[in-house]
Image (cartoon, rainbow, N blue to C red; front, side):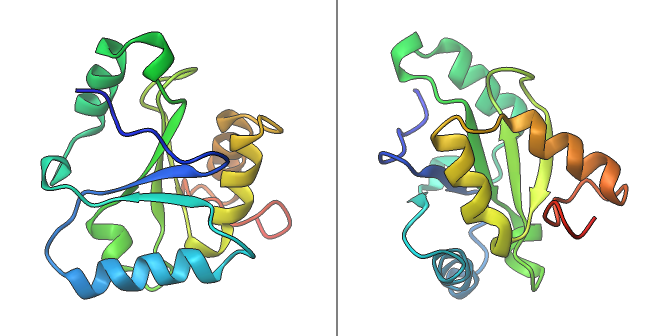
Length: 143
């Protein structure tokens, strides 16, 4: 079954941790508050509970080419429990399986740039890898 399609000019945010509905509400509120308009298509379906990146890659590979998406953001246990709510960004197309973390405050910038193809996944992932070694994107100015 292919991944759900995000709404136009938004990124797909999949909930993978279902331990706390209140935490999910808090994450969505943090993501929405970070931008001037909605940048996320939220999906909270139990079929994604605990889903592994490899499973998502396999689902995308099996999908029709027109149904494939380039990237996805996972709201996992780390996202739910960390005060910065860092989503796990996953590349599904160019370097399938490559990941980095993005705190809620930076999500709108990344989503907007990816959805209009202004920047590539690697532009953000490369910066997250070298900025402070954490694998978390902290903005281009903060490192």
